Length: 310
Image 1 (cartoon, rainbow, N blue to C red):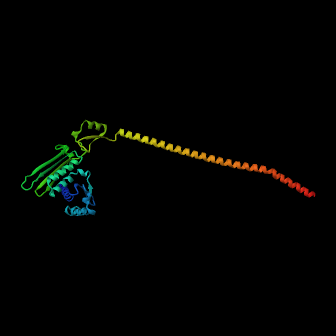
Image 2 (cartoon, rainbow, N blue to C red; image 1 turned 90 degrees about the vertical axis):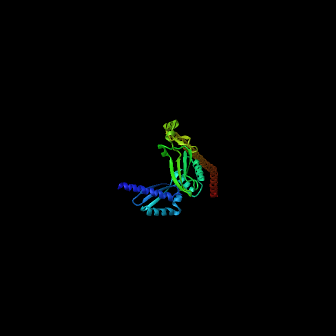
Image 3 (tube, one colour; image 1 turned 180 degrees about the vertical axis):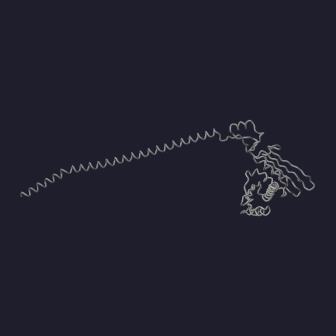
């Protein structure tokens, strides 16, 4: 019984993925993850263009939520839209655009060469694009066309590093199958590791691919002990410069304060000297006026005595 329950859950997830692939084809559906909570079930949908999936004021999500609740008997579905990381390398989105153009009635050659041009402009190691089916009009047999560029892995465990997607396109002439394989950038295959890469790994360096030419390997330094030491030395030098600047500013301030004190003391001395000079002048005037006052007093006394005798 338990096994049947898990099998049912797996089939439900596959049905949900197909449902979202159909409704979010223009938005570039990538993956679906289901998270169950006691209050509701969260459906996290990863999309290349989240704006198209959400719609104007969230109308599309609300309508899809009601359909999911009725069709798949999921109580309180809460749909979350997330943007895909590295949307340019999203294989499902690229192949869905090819399928849409084929179903519109555009010639498969135009679609194929346009897709090859766009893929060759991306900084990827390599890609493989296959068209297989009823390419010609009525009476034509099925045909297969393969477009390859760059470095690829076809067999073995290393194929897990590649991204792959398959989608059918139903045209007027018949069904056309499209398959795309792609090696994203910064993927390092084990058989491509040489002496330089091993020496770099021992020294504590990382190996990455050049964006312009992914076949070329570029060795870049990571923050090792030497880099840490250099940073510490730079920090010490900066601190020493800051301390010297502070000392210089403090010395300038002290000099300015001393000069101001000297000016104040000199002005005070000058004021004291001027006051002393004024006092001396006054004393001299008083000394000079004393004999005159004494002579006047003697005259007045003599005149008074003469008046009494008379």
